[in-house]
Figure 1 (spheres, rainbow, N blue to C red):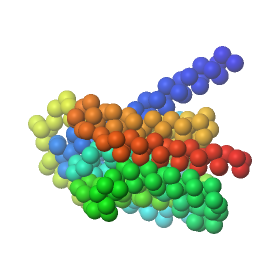
Figure 2: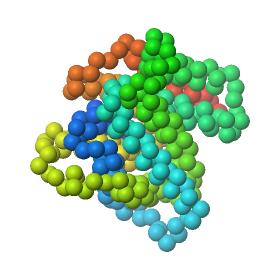
Figure 3: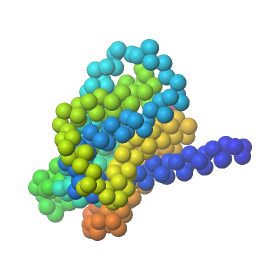
Figure 4: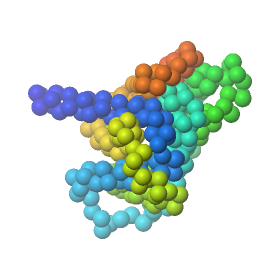
Length: 297
């Protein structure tokens, strides 16, 4: 009993750190944009992500011989979506508000995923419609569409956050299907590697190798940008298996508030009341969606 409590406590601490990296990454991305262009940041993020995930892969002792050919196309598509998402991630945080992006994307992409799955499975009921409507209302609040109209979507950065949310939702479904046929960490490592290959064609190595422009501020923030994907994602996948997907997913509720908190503290980014209200509504929507799924099990 003691060992189980101790193990769970360690997992909770690991998950807390994972969510911290996810939340801080939005502010850190805005800061690192001042040092490197988007293409270079995407390449370095995935290259480092691939390297740092290798120890997790080794620990799982995956068989490299029985590589499932059927998921190759899936890996390529997911990698392309990874590339698009990260391009929009850096562009959105550079041109728009990092805190708002962190709230909008992390609270709406689970709803986007749920909508797509519901359409594919053709399982739509009144409770699902109600739950998703609350989430959509939350997204509208965050974007401040009530005050600014549809033009709010076209503000600098905002359109990229919308693309991030939809892209990650679609990508989540691709990843869920592929992981039925191959090990999760192995699959993600392959996606990181392929995305690195895609990104390398857009890299300006002259800029990357100019170390004179980098300082401690860059290294600290770039650590969180990379940790969010490699360390944070790896911990989340491991915890989802050990704690269960429902328990693990509850930690995500903290990400939006970490995002807006760090944006306010470190880059003095003002956060409107509409973002807080919208974030709360979206979190309620995610909770209702999960509770509906749990009732069926």
